Amino acid sequence: MTKPLRKVVFPVAGLGTRFLPATKVVAKEMLPVLDKPLIQYAVDEAVDAGADTLVFVTNRYKHAIADYFDKAYELEAKLEEKGKDELLALVQGTLPSNVRAIFVTQPEAHGLGHAVLCAKPVVGDEPFGIILPDDLIWNGQIGAGRKGALGQMAALAESEHAGVIAVEEVPHDQTDKYGIVDAEPVDARSARIRYMVEKPRPADAPSNLAVVGRYVLPGRIFELLEQTEPGAGGEIQLTDAIEALLTEQGKVLAYRFEGTRFDCGNKAGLVRATMHMAMQDPKLAPVVREFVGQL
Ligand code: UTP
Image (tube, rainbow, N blue to C red; front, side, top):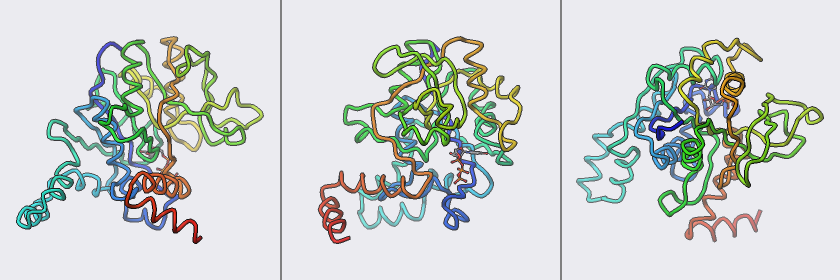
């Protein structure tokens, strides 16, 4: 993949059942870690990676995501009137002015692969990134000299002319929760994938390297997704199409990113992320420490 990455897809049309009843009306991606919703961390990471076009694959219940990135006329006017410049900058800064947000719908939740395929008309035939916002990957404040996970992967995809998938070591007894790769190490962070298997039992898993929510893939993946038959639960699996890409192109890389991943798709992960971010904040850290001590 010689072209730099410009487009990033956010599949956000899932049902978020693990956060019911909140997710009856609040999109999972709008759940906050301190004062920022998960989707904002994801967008900041995409922009850091060089993206200027963000494609949100959403559903008819998730208007809040579009509203969040839209102009908030009344609120902005009020903040301006009151001279609250810092807050105004926060409200206006959810999306940089040179970046555009495009919304497409996934009419029914037929799986991650199907959600990605819905972005085909916008992405076309060029390399693109995918971020699952419920996997929050924190590598320090963006702009402070450290690249976000997707930016690290985009650089590798460009230099190696290959698709890149983020992986992380998980405890051996948890392989049945993830896509697991068997890969030949290239250097400390990257490895050439030999094959991938979806949610293997620990005894059958070829390794403990799990696929997590970041991908850089060529536009070709869309045609492969179109040919992918529904798999487990009637869902079209992105993993199956990546397997087909691997067979066809012979080279897809697994990449151990620099940063810490919080699986905010479940309650424990969201609590951990919140505690972690609070501990980075000089005002909040002593409060958290004291409160945890009391508990
Ligand atoms: P999850 O497996 O976390 O499912 O999806 P979910 O529906 O969001 O949450 P739970 O398991 O019911 O609590 C992984 C990612 O794929 C997206 C989700 O929005 C999430 O970002 N997704 C999943 C879609 O966009 N469409 C789908 O049909 C399925």
